[in-house]
Amino acid sequence: MSTILRSTVGAALASAAAAVLLTAPQASAAERPAATDVKVSPRASAETKAFAKANPGPTAAAATVCGTGYTLNKAIPLPEGTDPSMRLATLFSYTNGSGKGCAILDNNYGASQYMYLKVCKVDGTGCDTDSGNFSQYAGPVYVSSLACAPVTAKMGKTSSSLYINYKSDYVFACN
Image (tube, rainbow, N blue to C red; front, side):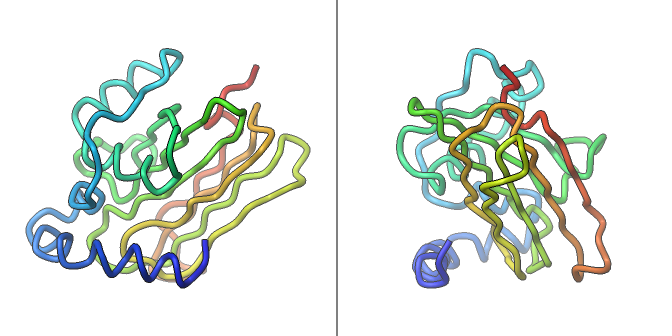
């Protein structure tokens, strides 16, 4: 995503998010303006459906970052195994009707962190990557052939001091 677009989106959202970040760092995306009626794929897991229901603001906000027409495929609280209310980040994957996938790594830490997000076609080509120090999210990153598209999500104080180093081939459907 371009720096100009990130700056424009970030400036519009920063004032709304600032007050809440001081009291609820797990909810950084919840303060972004977005509709709370995000579409959830009927094929989404029970965990993803429950997460979307319990966290409509962050789920819809991340979908808005992807663009119009995206449906939630998966929401993964990170680090893995973390209680969703204690997450440091949330990896969201969305799909649209034309076979395009979008991923967002939402920063729930409450302060700027090093973040890295990469998604590739199943053969490892056609990768889209976003990395840097972000207070809100890394991404969106897109893939045009999303079946079993490998996703890597990292977060930490620096690129060499990570507390999240997640990799999966199952963030998008594998069929």
